[in-house]
Amino acid sequence: MQGKPLNAMKASREKVAGHPLFSALTAAIGTGIDPHFDAAGLRYDRILVLMDPDADGIHCGVLLLMFFHRWMPQLLDAGRVEVVRPPWGEVAVAGEPTVQHAFSDPQLVALAAEMQVRGNVVTRRYRGLAAIDATILRDTCLVSATRKIDRVTSAEVEAMIEMLGSYDLG
Image 1: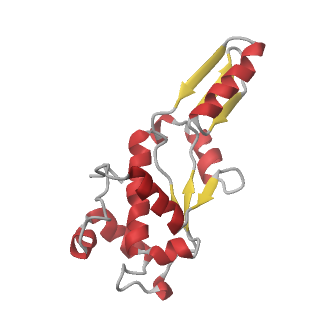
Image 2: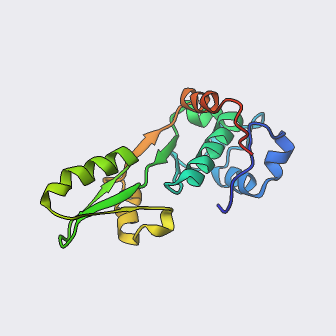
């Protein structure tokens, strides 16, 4: 995906169906969208959402989850939509080969404080998936045994929408 997706909460069915991202996503998933959603066409056991670990990526992720909430709520209700949590940054002690990954800003700060007793701490905040080394990306986001993943429910998407309130999501 390039750029921010359409705000599917505000858009008509025709506009969503004609949007290149949502059209391709709907075709890949195989179910169609409400009111023509058909679970029998589902091609995958679950849908994994992976976005950049920055403000724009989080915004795009919320817009994508809003699409599922409005047009494919059955997938959320069935527990088939999950968000993969990429690392937020890394912390290392200068001169040591071991790097620890943080998955939130508070965790990054805490790791840096914890490791500071061993020497000069170097932190690096990732600004996008492309900034993450391919091996790290594989190990933290793609390998099922080591990635961090959260199932998303309709109630959680509704809470996101409520939390955003009148903020214009574009």
